[in-house]
Length: 287
Image (tube, rainbow, N blue to C red; front, side, top):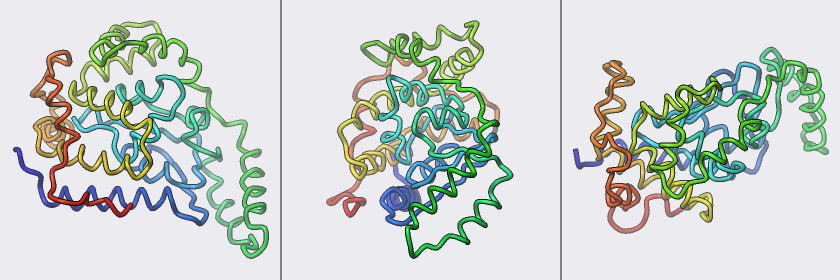
């Protein structure tokens, strides 16, 4: 308690430097988002030049369940979603299917799960020395046309108007109150999202609100530098260790949050998660 483990300093620096490298990598970089792509997986996926989703894809940022926050560049891509959908997804850990990912610019192409081998064979056959971009585009488009019939129905864009209305509030406690009221809603997807938020970490909710607010005018490198401070501070404050204990170690699914009331968390506690916990130059100043 109160200390940042040396391993955390190294781990988050390595992870965020890798994520930033993927975002800025000059060559074609393909991510095949098969099955569940959660948290750290989203950090790897969102920087890729070609993000492929399939019928089995389930994307999400579930950190509110463990007292962390949507890191690995989550501040960047959630802040850039339409309306208040980024805030909603960060607060509720709601699952995103392939159609949602395409709708929200969290993916670029939709292929069937069984088309991976055809994609790899096509990539091998391309002449990468001449008009590589044109050939790659043609390959991906042809495969996507074959898969179009299996694209699932959209979940979140059709609900955007209602979500935007609910989250058109002045502060985080009001947002949590508005969403939590949906736990018995006739819309099963919204009710499930509301229950996740109601049982999630109140401090994480504050961090989601604040990281999205701050990230709107930050560069990608600045986002990773901000998140590095946030992550190290989460390690020295009590919510993240308790969330990991309850969800992943003891698995009693009953975290005892240090700050259980979202409206009673002091502003100073939230602000402290953005403070530097190192001497001198920022460890990610080279990004």
